[in-house]
Image (cartoon, rainbow, N blue to C red; front, side, top):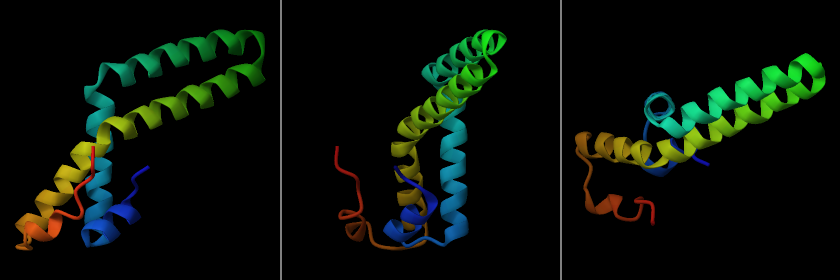
Length: 106
């Protein structure tokens, strides 16, 4: 999983810039993909339904679906985050050839 510390180290960016890139990428991916919305809505409905029967089960299901929502957002945000980081490196005037080793494979 990609976080701001790894991004800052990989692309040699200031930590504040890396945090902004990761935050924007996550927010955009969570808002733009229907799969994220589906997991969130279905998860909260299931958790609320279970909450009426057992508070502990509803709480656990809410946490599980919340984590699934977050992980799905991270999955969809990975490529846009890398693209934004490459753009920052290029706009800072560093060589594009130096980025070849930083580009994710896949």
